Length: 152
Image (cartoon, rainbow, N blue to C red; front, side, top):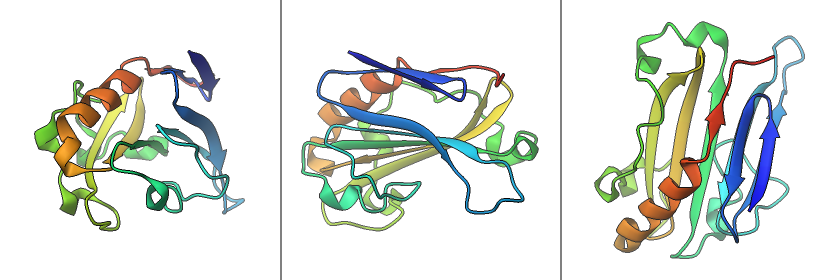
């Protein structure tokens, strides 16, 4: 297993998974917030925060995960009142209409939550709704090692 750690987020990648934790800031007047991407396939260098440019490369046995942090002002918002990622993921949580952009055969799941005083969106895409049971289990396995701490 490979361990990734940055921005007070760490994860043990399952064998065969690719991943990164980084921050992107297109507006110099704001603080760059962390983003974690995990996938069962090689992640392209150029990709959007919620997987644009990556999910198009997925096969029916693949999983893509985005953990996107919002600013500290979001923690008090009703959207983020849920605590934690709420694992394990259920195959019933995945829906083709849950995608940022519909891609035939794929299904998505999105959860807004807070942890360690931080606001996040967890966005998971599976390559095939027909493989939802197995792919939800794989996503849960990868996400179960994620640890979110208070930023330094």
